[in-house]
Each structure stands twice: as C-alpha cells, then as structure tokens.
Length: 344
Image (tube, rainbow, N blue to C red; front, side, top):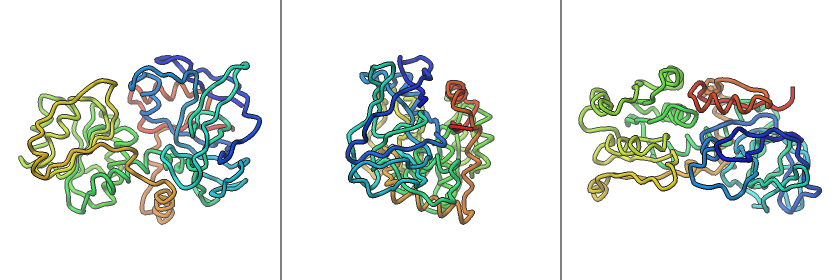
C-alpha cells in the first residue's frame, strides 16, 4: 500500500509502497482510508516544533474516514465493513500496541493512528463507527478539527450565550472554533488573522467581526468592538508567543483564555499573573478535552439535522499524490482545511 512518509524533518514527505504487518495485534484494527484531513499538527511534526524527532521514519495524519477491513482479537467497538472516523484523541475500546510497517525491508514507525496511508493499522480506541449514510468527506473533520473546536468551546472555555469571544488564528481549528461559538449564541465573535483570505472564509462560519492582526493596533481595534473591559473568552490557535500574550491581555478581569496552538520547543510566554489571583483563568487545551466516542455522534446529529454545515470549512480536496502540495498550500495560508482523497 502507498503511504506518505516523514523521512527527514523540514523536508517533503516521501510517497512510497509499504508492507502491512503480517498479523494484527490484540486491539488493533485494519482500515482502508477514504479521506484524511491535514492540520497544523502535521506541519509542526514536519518542522520539528517540539524538537528532534526520534521516531523517523514514520507516518503522519490523525483525522480521517475509512472502512474497517479486519479486526484483531478483543476488538468490540467496530466490526468488519463498518464505516468509521479515525481520531487522535482516545475514545472507547482497547489501547493497543503501536504499529509499524516495512519499507524496503526497513521499519517505518506509526503511532496509534495514522491517516496519510491507503491502509492503516490503528488502535481500537482511535476509531469510532458512524452510520452508513454519514457524509464521509466532512466526517474526516470529526477526527480533530471539529471535536477539538467544540471541546474548546463547551469544555475548556465553557462559553455561554451572549458572551464575547476572540479567536486568534482563522485556520482549520480556529475556523471550527468560530463555528462552535456560533452554536452557543455568543456575541460578538471576533476572528483575528494575518490573512484576508482566511478571514473572508470565517465570516461564513459565524464570525460577527474580523480583524487583520497588526501588533501595534490590535488591542485598540479590539477595544472598539469590546470596550475597555475586554472579552469574556479569548482563544489562541497560533502558538506564537506574542499572540498568546495578547490573547491573555485581551480577556476581561474574569475572562478565560484558552491556549490551543502549540509553541515552539523551549519558547516561554510572559504575562502579568496578578489577575489569576482574582478569577481570571488561563488554561491550555489538549484536543478540547473531548471524548470522540461521545462527541462524534453529537456532531453527526447536528449535521444531519442541518443545524450546521461543516462542508464550508473544506477549501479543497487533493488526490493523495498531491499531498505535499496540500501541505504547502496550508502552510502558505491558501486553504483553511484541505482533505486528501484516496482512490478514484
């Protein structure tokens, strides 16, 4: 089967044929991948944002859809023939051993889930079955972007109706957070980014206001919308230190700031911690603290009831052979969320 392999950091992925493991281990599931999302986490892995990668060469991708081909011993969450969403957060079921593949006789590592490959051996707790009539294109976003976003809003930020929110970064996760905030009847919903293209797209997802990020006047422009008190909730999805600091500073005295974006290895932000003693909250988010097994069915129900239209988040679908182009387009801000399609 073909796969896109990270061989060296800060280099394009190598597309090659890999050999599947001869046998599934306890709790493992073999899945034929239909669609895979690409998000900033993969760019961070390629660029080595968290430091040196000790598992090279390895596979990437952590959100997608596919069909269950085979189940290992002990698996009960899914069965052969099921359509399913693959996700990086733990869901119900067994956490199996991680898998590995062979490339020209040499080992290629993989985690509990990968989606940049035609066939994937995944851990049972990284896969959730979905009804056969599920839109498998938009459902790929349930694996990370949408579950993370709704988790940030409902679990981490606990956003309430009528509260104000500022989202720094209008990429895939930032746009999904705006969409999730709109379902909570927040107002105003302000999106901030350096890209006019991204901000134009996020208007269609529920942003009431959009601002181009310029450090010298961003606080003044936010004040024009929010007043001097600041926002009830601020969310940073960029991982950029100065933006994270401004995000915290832009929240009001009892506001909540949620840090979603991952900073570069070793970087530290600087804040005035005094307000933390008086009800202001600063917290980090790991995937919105979501449980995919519980949250994915909720998102599917919203989509089927036409309460939400997730397709507006998908900018472009690329054939698998163009995966490096898709990554480049995401890196350059040309797309909000791109998908990789396997097969014809």
